[in-house]
Amino acid sequence: MVVAAVIAFCIVLVVLAFLLPRWSRPVQSGGDRTLAVGQRAGSAAPGFLGRLFQKPFSSGRKAVNKSGAAGRRGRSKMPL
Image 1: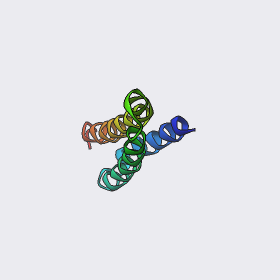
Image 2 (image 1 turned 60 degrees about the vertical axis):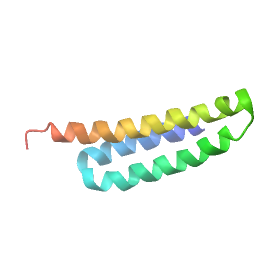
Image 3 (image 1 turned 120 degrees about the vertical axis):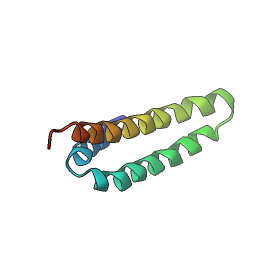
Image 4 (image 1 turned 60 degrees about the horizontal axis):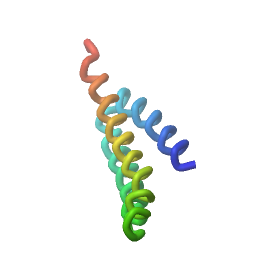
């Protein structure tokens, strides 16, 4: 469920970053903040479980940040 939501959010973010780069920054930071809450909650578990529970959220944060940057980078390479 979380994986599907992150994938859908990344697709929306890439399109938004390509079409409207300035408006994509707050959307990206909102997604990053939301996943950071899950990552902090997962890391509260002791030892190995904490690292295991926070992993999907940290991977999701990396994916959200990469997709936003990729959309803006693609827009900046356009000849317009």
